[in-house]
Image 1 (tube, rainbow, N blue to C red):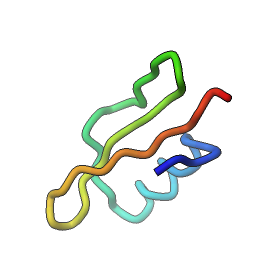
Image 2: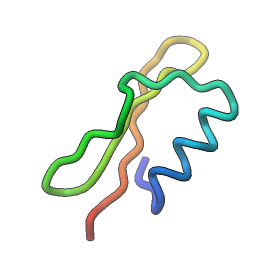
Image 3: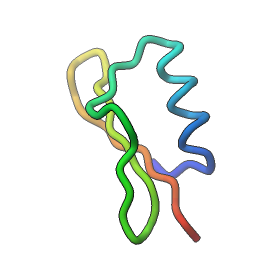
Length: 51
């Protein structure tokens, strides 16, 4: 899922008790991203584009 503000989305999800895979977002040439687990343990990623 692509979002506009990764830091704000992380805060929102953490307030709801979402478990993240890494301590901080990762970054590559296209943007920043992070991964979290849903209640079933399935990993999902959210992405903030640099463009």
